[in-house]
Length: 226
Ligand SMILES: [Zn+2]
Ligand SMILES: [Zn+2]
Image (cartoon, rainbow, N blue to C red; front, side, top):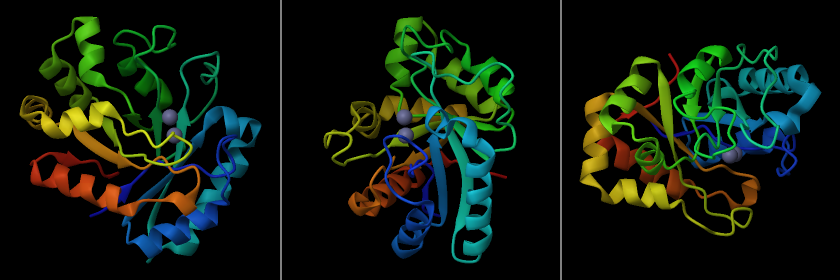
């Protein structure tokens, strides 16, 4: 099963595409499980509207595509969701920048934060092994705890003009490191794959497919929403 559960539409300030363009591209590219995950601060007060647009799209594309309604949550620069903000009705959320010193989800805070989110929670584009070294936390213990709490970790394979054609170093490290793969495999944590599209014209489904295949071949669990 090919998945890509990280993408942006014009509901994100940095995105440009109408949601349907993404769904069309996902079908064309043979992505089985596709998630749209606009930034919470871009969506702003349009959260219900955004959710309804995705629900309508999901229903219209059912049979061709399994579309998930997601949201990416910022945790720095005062952009985090407010304590009373409800996002529990989304299919999942991606939490970003938890490794930054100014993150409102610092330290081991992701466990409480995921409970507070109330939906499936993943950690977006974060070098967790470096983060754990800074925190002085044991990787196997941490990943096992993620697994027990149903929190997944994203392999972000973005490569486009918006991201300056940079590949994430933590992903390259992970692919090379038997040690890291072994920890993740033993912990039972799930990995998700995301291209983080902001311009669907620059979409690279080959990168998504290669990563899904790599994870499967490594005997690691690919996340799927139950
Ligand atoms: Zn992000
Ligand atoms: Zn993103």
